[in-house]
Length: 87
Length: 220
Image (cartoon, rainbow over all chains, first blue to last red):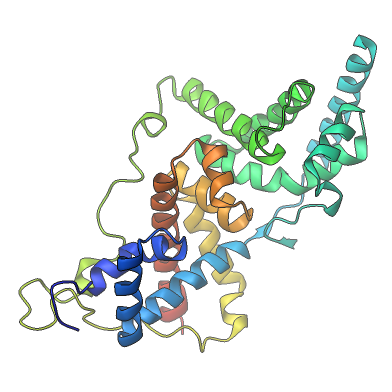
């Protein structure tokens, strides 16, 4: 955990997304991974960021409002009439 | 209620979808609306805070898509193009409603800013051996029961956290994590560089993580 090239925890937390996205160069990726292997805190933080992304994914979608849907279908039919006439 | 964004399998092929729309295939149009309406509302509400106005923008976007479909050249994917129209219209509407230019449309305010983790969580710079290391480790969430993560309270907190993000962070996390867009698709839809996209995603996810930490650990 020593040496000038070491990345510290407060820096790790700011490059987690770059790591996930494959945006770190090879040297930084190696230093990142070497840190994670020995640091329980950062390992947990990495996991927490994965959970954050996965939880956002689980936010339920809203069903389209039936009235909006009906309006859109009407608008679609109007558009279709107009475009078919133009042809 | 479905999980995230579920795209109708009938829409898998853009060229077929576009051809069907040009032919006036109503079922394909309805499938598109069902697939993307919820995500579009989420993104629009980030720019246009009044939810009725955001609904108007989404409706206008569908009409603009139809009016432009004959000119659509597949240089981008259909959904990317759809969200570009949406975001442009949302910004225009927000400017009109506020009678001023939303500065976030011009300045990268939501990319700048301080650390995403409270500096007090780390040992100070003058610590003799472990400067910049965790003062106390973040908790291990891998043992948390799935029910806990998926609870109504957790979901509501995450939804609120996303809704309170600055508009571009909100748009990026919505498209990436809820909509399942690739980084390239998000960059194209929101006109961002790779680097901007990553910074916005990082800040948004870090905020969601911080909110989860409160919900999962305080109420335990």
